[in-house]
Image 1 (tube, rainbow, N blue to C red):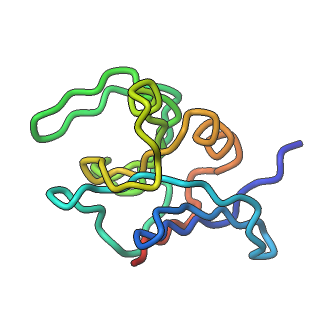
Image 2 (cartoon, rainbow, N blue to C red):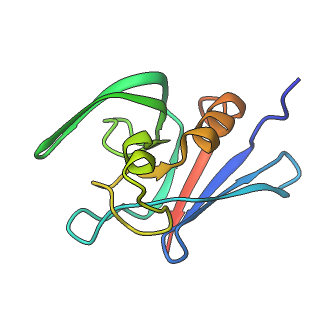
Length: 127
């Protein structure tokens, strides 16, 4: 049985996502890429509202079909935590802000998080 994640904290300053267990102990720290300066990731409190094994994402000037392991933390699904296989395939490292506002991570890490994070899990995005 998988241990469930109790909360998630995204730190925009160091481009990391930390997953916490039920005792508030960090169980995984993942290097991420958040919003680029032109499309910053908003700070604040949210929760995992929806989860998709694969989803087409649309935004201002882009369409990204088949985005894997997506968990949306805003009700309108504009900010999500998800895998970014295109970033990996292009050889672009994580830890650098480069998204349209979402929280991107390596596919392997996104799947690990997706499988352990229930809907309703609190998410904090901070500087």
